[in-house]
Length: 137
Image (cartoon, rainbow, N blue to C red; front, side):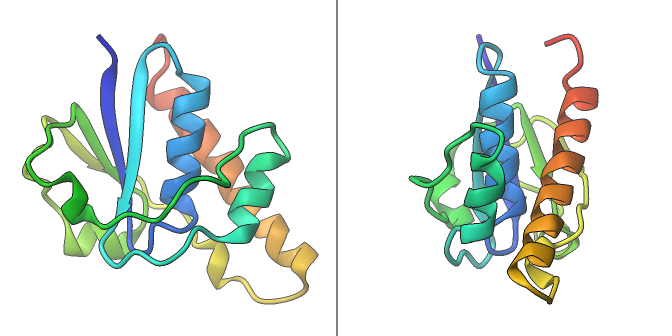
């Protein structure tokens, strides 16, 4: 049976969306990942672009509120931003919960290329984290 994972971020627009897409892609046979936000917004176009560059399409994803997952059980819940960790240090349906903070690429200012570089960097940091966290799966 696949491990159920939930990635939580404030807006569910970049980091948690990328983590969901990456976990479902890299560990498709052993993890079923979802993502949610404490104050969901819209999936960031640069997150979609950065993921598309490595062959993962998250363009059909939507930002979801944490409330959509009330009453559900997850083997692992991971907060991927400090704000979500402060607001939601405990998810009732989590068998295990941890925090893995990543820099917010949406906070980077500059040209589109400079901003996209930040999304790529965060994406790559999430890949390293997931490969280390789920090694052997």
